[in-house]
Image (cartoon, rainbow, N blue to C red; front, side):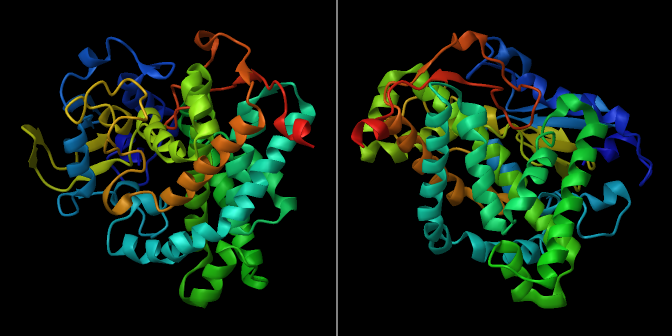
Length: 415
């Protein structure tokens, strides 16, 4: 995306100069733990705000819910297509999030059969097994544990690996390649290097599946399309599934656990009441909005956007985390309240680029949280929440660690 911000000439790229761009976008979205910085409203005073003028173009940050939906849904005046900005004609530049219809429609249609409710529901028993096995490992290593490394990250990692059909012997290598992808503190060159390495890994996996198709997503797509779709495009789709379904769900599991531990009434609620799980999870999605910004959109023409003049070539970025706390859509949205009437949110994006795996993520959250709190009903934080370190320089907001004392294991007491 950001190569255009470096050079007006296609293909002339100095990645070292990209470092300041993500930081500039994320700076107005800073949080104090789970809450926005108190002075945040003064840094981005308008729902459509010119954030910067860099490399000869304006960068606009959209923080309102209505405005964000309008930008994300618009197809004729905004584009996600990265190719004109990097001097490439390949359909695989940047992945699915950086394509427009009809190319986007063609590529996404390869994935949608894998994410129907019928297919997702078939995964439910396996997800339950993965969660229970991870809780067994926590109990065996306890009573002190880190819920980030021992709970939040392993569960979606294993779910996505199984969905893709990656064999166990490949998973540890792929895990090592995935962590730096959304961490902008590593700088532009580091992020691009991590993306390249993980995509190369998935290209190797796709070619192996081509020779001997398995029963995972990779194998099923290859079986369905044959030679009509190339290995690079299939690997690119798999890469999007992995990055979209791993870091994001892991962060939701970690930060959602913090929400429950910070306020025991919510912990007790989903422990004791099955009917409360869905509204608690949905409010977590809105309240946490771990994906802080959407894919950038490039203006195809001069246009008026809610009173702001956007010039052709300007970059418009929707701040999902800010839009989900837009006070115009409901009262007191900086407070976590699963009893409130359902509030619209953009946690999974909006429009034709809405997350294809949204229902899989919901299923993982609805499965993992009740099992965690019922297995360890006395679990508590072992540090003051104010001492926790958060990844505020990451496109996916996250907490580095979540130290807990597990307390009594209900499984051992009932055995």
